[in-house]
Length: 281
Ligand code: R5P
Image (cartoon, rainbow, N blue to C red):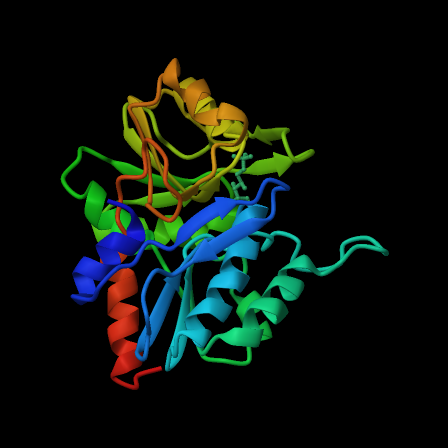
């Protein structure tokens, strides 16, 4: 079940699948098939790939025209978050641009493991970034894991939450990124000999990080390597590259739909919405 439908079940509210097609010239057409929406409306939509952004803007307007009293945007995977600042002169601040445009027609925003939480400060309305790490930890409890690792220091906090929740040791590997597709993981210095390791990360894009990390762990004598991430982008058929690998398991959350998005964050999102309705944020 996709996240929006599951969220509807969790909250006990109707889930309407908006019609989404393309005009012959490629422009987006969308429609919410109902007479009125005089209620609090939740729109669940990623800002990735680009077409979803346009659809989101149109849905926000359609919902408001149908009488929505409030609009909560649930953006499970917030695209464009990695260009969160101007790295070189002449570049845009893409993440801010997206926020400013989405902000024109919403009352609350929920994201999950956004690349950098500070991006959400570009919204003037209440906003919250939810952490999938505890959900991932619960999913892997009792599944024969001995050690939790992140592939780099940037995700060390995530490994810590998963490790502590599972009652397991945790650590991180050392990663050097050379380009969007090239990474190197230094030989593992953490003791993983004979251990079944769970690697946790925020996203898998090309899969380069996970392939290098699992190889480093195997070289260091790990007995098994499983992988869990929040957002499984798997660009350029990256998921297929894992098919012949020695990974025990590869799983991600249902922030993006794919063949391995079996860890549901619906309960997490529903909890945040209930808290908002109770005036807690
Ligand atoms: C890096 O900051 C992220 O946490 C991920 O490790 C990274 O985006 C994964 O990308 P890829 O799968 O292309 O190595």
